[in-house]
Length: 163
Image 1 (cartoon, rainbow, N blue to C red):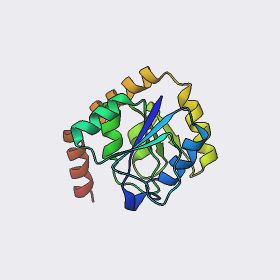
Image 2: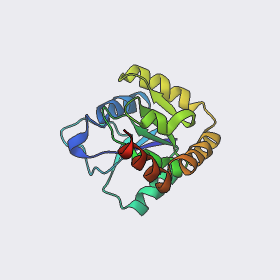
Image 3: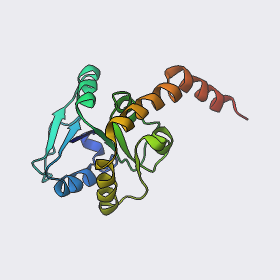
């Protein structure tokens, strides 16, 4: 099984990269892919973390389709477009409990309630025993039914015009 996350060098802590590095040490038989980074200079990384570098949207979708889980355990986040993209490729999401991420994921994935490597380990163990094929299909369906571009535009207009 493998995990993927989208990360940028300047936002390692903000995006939860430090927790992912810690958790990779606890799951040495699984591979963790960091998209958006060529390397993690100055950081001791385990052998099971692979930096994929910058990927085009086509390449990123291919990687989403190859992995079982998408991790986005940010400390702060906007809407969460990347998690939606991964869910469309049937990645089971593991996200932090910030902003809109839990709403996007709902029951189709796993939400880290508090920033803690111990809690993340418990959550990943739970995820590894789940019916990933079913959750992946549910994740894709959730995005299609709830977060299409047209639906998001309507929600945004509603928020902007609300009094």
